Structure formats: structure tokens, C-alpha cells
Length: 237
Image (cartoon, rainbow, N blue to C red; front, side, top):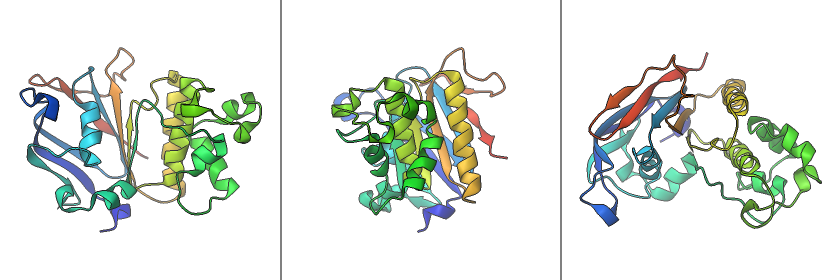
């Protein structure tokens, strides 16, 4: 199956609880539809199941009931390693290695990476000012777990790496939480533009904490049983 032509991602009547607390469902008969070529937001309070969606889509866990479908194919029938090559999950706590900024971005691809590709990915992560501020730019060592960088700088690098990886399905799980609203908007715009330049239609799923900054023009649908909030997708035009 070629995920670059993915039409949709569907969660259908999914019931899930973590093994450590099987009596407390995190998702209770959850049904979601995520169309390709669109940016979709899942917004909810802490503990509402936003991160759980990413964990299930990566097959870190399996639902107790229900199904998750990609183009009509149950992910239970898909090889986990293959699936994780085609789905990128960027979490709030960025994973960085004790290498240079350049190398941390380049890890997004397994084969040789050209400098122009890294620079292009850096634009998506809105890394311009960061590279100016760092003593050696792309050649700056980030330290163990990126400890020499701020939380926002770490998240920008992780987003740039995800862009370089260029997976058909991208999940950003509060991956811009350490950034200001202006930076978040810039990154969203760069993601949209980069997709249009490549003439691709990836599925972008943003999981975000519900706050007063949630755009008012996006209506939510509240499932009072488990406090899940799904906002309609922003069409990429």
C-alpha cells in the first residue's frame, strides 16, 4: 500500500485503556475521521486522550475494541516497522541526540542528506533565528537530550527532522507547546507551503491542549463521556 496517496484515517468505535488501569477507559467508543490533504486539530484538556491517539496510530498499543483504518486497511494487519516508516509522531518532549543541530535534523532520513534539504527542513521548523543565535549555527552541538538548547529550540529541530522525513502521515502531539503563537502560526504555514511545493497531500494531525487561545472560528464537538474535543479540519488552500 502506498501511503503517499492516503485518502483517510479512521478510528471506528475504539475502546482503549492503558494496561496499568484497565478499569479506566481513555477512549470510549471513539470515532474519528481524518481526511488526507488537510490539517486537523484534536483539542482537549489534559488526560482527554490526545496523546493516546498517537500511541495507537504508531501501534505502541492496541485498542481493546474497535478498529483503526488507513485507506480501509486495519493497522492491525500492517507490519509495525513498515507503519512507523510511514507515520511520523513528534511529541512534546523532543528526542535529540548529542550531535550537531545538522545531524539531529539529518537523522530524519536514512540515506545521504544534502545540505539544501536540511536548510529547507529548517525553514519548516522556523529555525532561522535559532541558527543565527547558536554559536556555530547548524554545527552547534546540542548536548545530551538537547540540554544546551531551550525547549522551543528543541521542538523546532524535532519538527524540522519530521519535515525532512516527509512521511505521508504526520502527528504533532503538542510539539509546539514551548513556542509562542506567532511561531506556531509560522510553522503551520511552512508545513502547508512545503506540502504544496511537493504537490503531495499528507495528513497532518495536531494534538493540542485546550486553552483560551483555541481559535474561535473552529467549532468543537464535546463528547461529555470522556472529554474528547475534535475540531474540524483546516482545509489547505
